Structures are given as C-alpha cells and as structure tokens.
Amino acid sequence: MKQHILSGRKLLYKIQHYIGMTEKEFRMFFLISVLLLLGSAVRYANFYDETSGNPDFVAFDAEFRRLTDRADSLSRIDLLEAEAKIAALPEFQPQPDTGIELNAATAQELQKLPRIGPSLAASIIKTRNQLGGFLIVDDLLLVSGIGSKTLEKLRPLIRVESRINSSPENQ
View 1: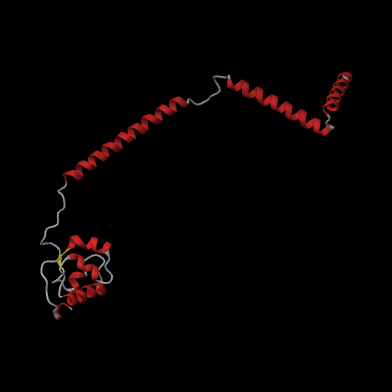
View 2 (view 1 turned 180 degrees about the vertical axis):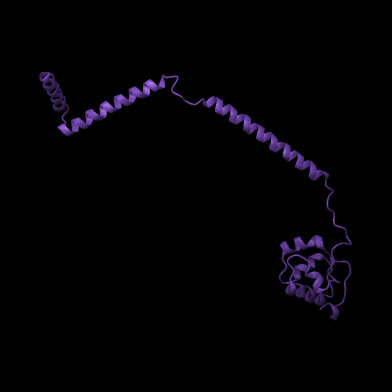
C-alpha cells in the first residue's frame, strides 16, 4: 500500500515539475480541477434528471397571459362605461345671465370668486372706477394681480353687461 502512495506522489511530482509549478501552486490547481469536474458532473446529472422539480414555466406564462388579458378586458369595460356616462351628461353651457356682473359687483361679491381676496377685490374696483367700467371680461387683465391663468378660471363665473361711471358706493 505504501508503494502505491509513493508511486502516486512520484507521478504528481513529475507532473508538477513538467508544468513548472511549485508544490502549493500544483495543489491549488489540482483542487480546483477536481472541484470543477465534480461540479460539472453534478450539473450534467441534474440537467438530464426529469424529476428534479423544475417549475413548469410554460404553465406559469399561460396563467399570467390569461390573467392580464382578463384585467385588460375589465379595464376596457370600465373605460367604455365611463365614456358612456360622460356622453350621457348634459354639456355645460354657462347662461349669459349667470355669474357676477363685474361693473355692478361689490367687494364682498368679488371675494366669492376663486383666488380673489380683499386686496384683489379692491384693485378690481379701483381699476373699474378708473376706466369708467369694464367693456369686456378681458379688461380684468389690466388689474394688477390678475393674469391670463386667473382670468381663464374666472371667465365662466363673471360677465360684463353694462358700463358704469365710477361711483363712491362701489369703493
């Protein structure tokens, strides 16, 4: 038995010497080679083992497609129902006599409008008195503090019908 071990060591020594490695380098090389061979053998054996418990991805994919198609069809139905409800609603058309009359409104009435506080209401009345009344709704752009965005929000809520002279009761 001792002779087999000795002959094995001699063989390893000859291989080590032929490759040109130190003893430690050859041991690491030999260990890594053996581990790679074992890993490859295990992988090869599991690859061909049909009972290895691999999940059936085809079934998972089919179920995923079925559920997403169902969700898509439900969202399409919801969208169609919402569009039908919107189409059934009467279209909003502001009446010409609704809204606040800019040339007759008091400061308290103007403050009921969105984004109009006491100081902006006072500026509107001051500008209205300086102009002798507003001719059109767009004249509100002359008021400091009212821009195009604010005017577009106010447009459905206000109107201009008559022009007035400045009067002290509106101040």
